[in-house]
Amino acid sequence: LSDQAKAFAMIDTPDQLLNQGFSISNKVSNHLFQSRDALVALPGHIYPNFYPRDSHWQIRGLLAAGKFEEVKSLLSHFIKYQNEEGSFPTRINLAGTPLYHTGAPDLDSAALISLSIIEYVRWTTDIEFANANWKVITTTIDFLKTRDIDGDGWIEQEYNQDWADRTKRHGKVNYTQCIYFQLLKEASALGKLLKRNEAERYRNASVLLKENYDQLFWDEDGGFYIDYITPAGERMKKL
Image (cartoon, rainbow, N blue to C red; front, side, top):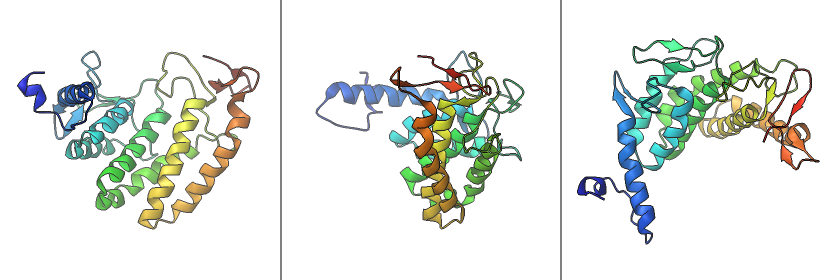
């Protein structure tokens, strides 16, 4: 490593490869950011837009590297783009224009931004930020609940309303349910800490989903969880 790269190292363990890998990753993370009214992260040079979905996974790494102010700035930037129904755009171009890939909001983008808020608060104990943005989380959950078309607790989606935007999966998508469940569970814990009335309701909803998950998505003969269930009830077994 160069002296410049070594300056980014924030851990010191007996495993030198781990130390070096962390140092390099930490340095590279600084190149994700572009300066506008806030520091915002780009997923890569061939995708010159800001993606709420991608940013969640970047935020997890940035928090682990102690880049708390950068994460707060990034979240504050994205929160401004939540619309009245509680959803977020697929991406935001460099001019600040929100764009929707299919003309409809992505379900995972909405959930992942709210999960990022909770993750940031867990790392920083920034209760002021949590209280200020609790409505962002509750509005997101309210939006996602409107996608429970048949009233069974699980949410349904149209084509391409998650990251797999070329597969045309629709109906009850396993991946989307997992993120929705995690949001309910995490929001319940944060709501309890903030003494919010919604906490118990979110906990009850997450418990119900957990109890019914295997029955809905587990394929006993194949020994795996299926990808999604179409509105017609067809169980799509993609590996």
